[in-house]
Amino acid sequence: MNSKDSNKYYEMAISLSKQKIFEHAIEYFNRAITLNPDNHKIYFNKALALAHIGKYEEAIKTFEEVEKLNQDDKLFWQNKGRVFIDLKSYEANLLYIPKKAVVFLA
Image 1: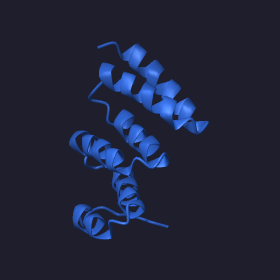
Image 2: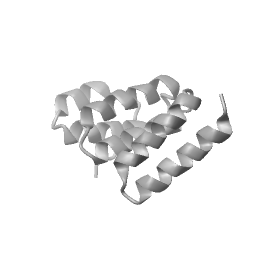
Image 3: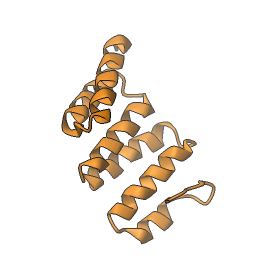
């Protein structure tokens, strides 16, 4: 695993996301994941990019990878909840988010 290359891909993906070039950002997130599959931040930001382009189901699956790697991140639970709301899957949102998670959906 080459973490320098992974970081370069991740930084490029973040830059592209900030420019709202989400499709290309996702490509770079995928490259970073290939080199560093245990970094939950890469999955988290990839899921956000997917949600921005309306790929909600894929975003949820990617958030599930974040959950496997880091369940204690409240920002993760908040954003996953927002994707469920965007899907208009309110029941899934209520069932999925644990009571210990603090979620602000404003």
